[in-house]
Length: 426
View (cartoon, rainbow, N blue to C red):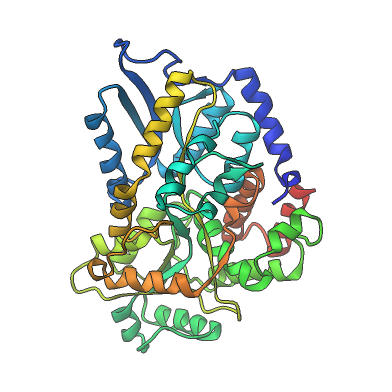
């Protein structure tokens, strides 16, 4: 997408970063008292207990054991708080040496502010080995420079459902159309079961898991680019239709009452405790569900049966970037860390716990849970839709998330949300 969409946020961040001087956490000297050791501060968002996070950190923590000349000072922050912390510290010129980033619109302001070091000089490390392909880096490439290495593909929308709870409501299979889906919700309510668990206290679930796919079923995949170019608007009827789906589900009491005060982990807990029959979440939830479900629970997976377009919002997942304002010695050490981390072992570990990786490592299909295999098949058969928070500017995405929360509280209508978003664009 073109740079016009991004400039206001990027320019603002650039100004603040310039004032802050982009100092690295822990300063630019080499190491903690040993001239032969380079110490790197590394920030990562944390989903403690989630199998993919544990697999990632297990590989990260091996680095210090295998490198006497480079030591990582690892600092993790809960996922819902990480973006706020990163942006606040970036604005204050206090970034760590290496830090987790997300692709697209979230990476761009940091790049345009000069906060992130290009890694074009080591890109061939993955390309020449055949581990990754040229297009793998696209979502972390801005203005012909690459800034991070992809680690996993991130489809953000699935419906996980309890087959036994649906069976008790009279369903042997998941409804194939939207009217049938709405009837399922009513029938579950008649059984005094909460149809869908939703934990939107962080604001991102309704945006990333729900509207990114639901709106795409009406707008098609080029909508956000067309809005950026001025060819379409958030007030267009097809986008409003997507918002009306969430309004309809909320008005018919498909969700738990505490949807805006619990988080995404708690909504999974509610689902696994059979306080609800369904939960909508991304691919990352599959491993958590498999890890924590009761032995006799039979869990199915599908997507919302809505519209004629079989699409799922999808983007590359998080990656690690290097602070541009650190010493050459630290930059070399940081690049060595990236080459060591984003290698076959990490990709295999993530794939073994059900994450979809963008690489050619052997797929252990016979070792994966059937739920994971089904999730992968659904993803392969679907068209990709853009994930809103990987495409919109941070300020516009914040507005969307706030407005979606307001929608569930009855404080905004779909039309008012469209107008508010369009005003933010203009």
